[in-house]
Structures are given as structure tokens and as C-alpha cells.
Length: 424
Image (cartoon, rainbow, N blue to C red; front, side, top):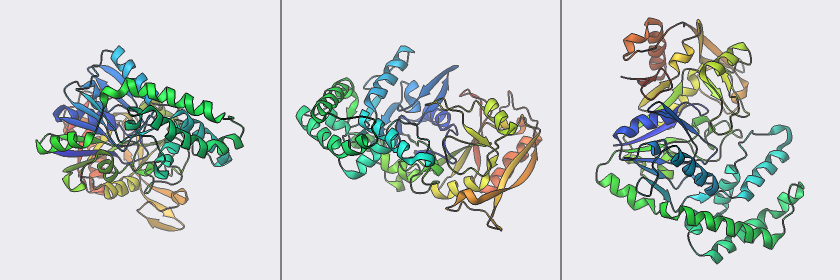
């Protein structure tokens, strides 16, 4: 069975914990897109792990973790992440981690470019993580990018490719005065640095296509782990306040190297409220004590940046669109315990859009005013193992989501630990 796990909001829905749970029955987990701008927090055997580039399955030595072709890899960040996890006792070896030789590489120059572009945007900043992800994907689209296979190939060939990248971007970087490039010295410095990173990662770098194909032929369960989320998707998200990759289930297929007709299940992950990092529209945002309380109770701070997330009520219009766009067959609902601490809970079921009532996300999402349904909260899910044990009001909340979305809620998260999840 092949399962895609994707986010249905603006990220940080808890995809890592669902991927980690599903990985218990998987032979392979593939991280499909994004870079170290993303992050998953996994709680395993009572210990919390913050992951950025590595798949959430890496804490399980019996699963093959794959960093797929659709990702962009900062080698320095990846090496640091591997060493950090090893220091915490996580076993990471070539027999349980494979990196696609087709994955593209984020270099220091891309990080500089990221900051330059944010400077040039002025008041219209996107609020990127500054990790160089956007410029790397731009480089990829321009067909001038460095790939992992280049880092473990011929040094002179790598140097020549880096020379072109520096030549292309030198004028832009110098135009804002952030950095003056001495052309030849910078090219050599980058080539030397990244060739050394290639040596350190070479044992993990392979052509992942035959590995994935063989797993499919043998009938092994495969999890495709999406990064970011539906409304951060480059094509379908709230552009321009989006990421630089395709975050939908279809994007998972591209990034993993798996045909879309081979996918058996798509699990859409959501929270019982909504959060967002960075700029952009957010109709249900609560810039008040409600939002502050959601942030506090849900520990809503970025895994990668530590930035406080913007928080607000659940928006089912978004979830409905995400289910359609991804072809979701099931939903995973996290933070039911968090939202249950409110005595009164609001859920957006439509928008007032230029004087009309609509139930879809338009291109100018910022012009949508939420129309709410109100639910009674105050429930306690602690120790629950079945839907019935979460209480009548919580059940009504879950059932309403299912009826509105017309997709079953199969997983219900009632706490941060991997064991605190109800399976229906």
C-alpha cells in the first residue's frame, strides 16, 4: 500500500506524528519536497525529536527513510541534523537512510539571495525562514542548479557549475550592498566547501528510483511524507505568501518518483484550529487573547525558527478545498485536546465575500470574512482510547467536521505523544 500524508492548512498540522504512526507498518518513508525550512516534531518513547530534512521515520531503525528527489538539501544543515540525532542515540546508517542523487542542493549563495529578495520586497515581505529554499527552487527551474550527484562527482565539473551560479547572481547581490563577490575566490570557496560536504554524505547518496520501484514490486508499504501544506502550495496556495514547491499529494508523487495511480490512500492532516507562520491572508485569525491562548495551549512555535505562529479558529472551507485538491480519503484531526479547553469554540463554515456567501477559497482570500458556527467546549480527552470516551460535546465537534467535509476522521490526536491518538 502507498499512502500520501499531506497538510490541509498552512502547515504545522502534525504531519510528523501521523507519518511516524503510519511508519510502524511501513517498509519505506519518503520525504518528498521542501527543505530545512520545514520541520516535524516527533515524540517517540517519551522523547521529543525536532526534525527538519530527515523523514519522521528516522527514529525507527527498521524503516528505510528516503530523502526524495523533490527536496532541496542544505548539506551542512543535514550533516548537523544527522550528527545531532546520533548524539541522542538515533541510529542513522546507509541501511536506514538514503538520499536521492537527483535532489537539488541549497548553498550559502541561496541563503544570501533569500535575504536579498526579502530586502527588495520592502513592506511586502513574505516572511520566509531565510534558509535559501526559494532561490534553490528558482535555480532548479532555471536549470543551473547543483544536485547531490554533483557533490559526489568530479570536483572541476562542480566548480564549473558553481561558477555559472555565482556569475548569474553576482549583480543582484551586489546591487543591495550586502556582499561584494570576488568572483574566483568565492567560486573556489564554495566548490571546496560543498565538495567536502559531498564526501561526508556520499555513503547515503543513491539513485532512489530502483529502490522505490523494488519496494513497490515486493508489496512493501510506502509512506510519502508531504512538507508544508496545501495552502502553501506554489500553484494552489495563497500566492505569493507560499513556499516554492508543490505540497499536494500530486507533488508528493513527483518528489518521490511514484506514479499517481499507484497511490492507495491520501491522509489529510489538520488541527482543530488554524495556525500560520509568515505573512498572508488568514480570515479566522484571532489577534487577541483567544489567539494568544491557542498559541500557549498548543505550543505554537516554529520547529525550525522558533517563531510564534499566528492562531485562530478552525476554517472548514479551507479543509474542504484541501480535501478536493489532494483527493483525501481520510482525515487526521490533531489538537482536539487543545481546543477542548475553550468553553466556547467557533468554526468557520463559509465566507462573506463581497456581499455573497461562498464555501470555497477564492484567489483573493484576504477579502473573505468568516461565517461561524458555535460549539460547546470544555471537554477532557485525557486517557480516552475511543471516540465515545472523549465526551458528547467533543463527539459532536468531530461529527460536524465529517459531515461538512464528507471524509471520515480516522485519526484523532488528543496529546503530543505518539500513543495519544484515537484510531477509528
